[in-house]
Length: 100
Image (cartoon, rainbow, N blue to C red):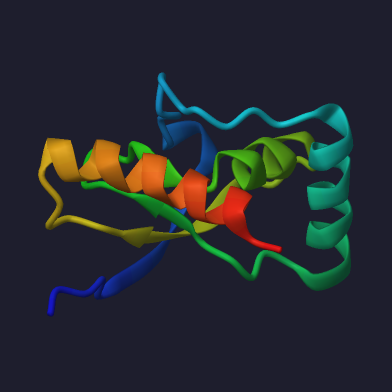
């Protein structure tokens, strides 16, 4: 089984949002994410590919940017093909929407 192996802090300005991200983030949701960052810190890392394209975590990046956070923890997912990256982004969004 393939697995991610590396987590590192990356400058927030180096991260590239996925242009066709299907999920939108309301101001209310970003405010909740900002509150979570202040209360608990940055616990859930951003998933990125080798070129620093965001695969998951767009809302957390938006909230961190508004909070003035300069670096965020990122997990490098380097083994996915381009087709798998697109499929993962859609699946990740769908799984979150299906949660109760």
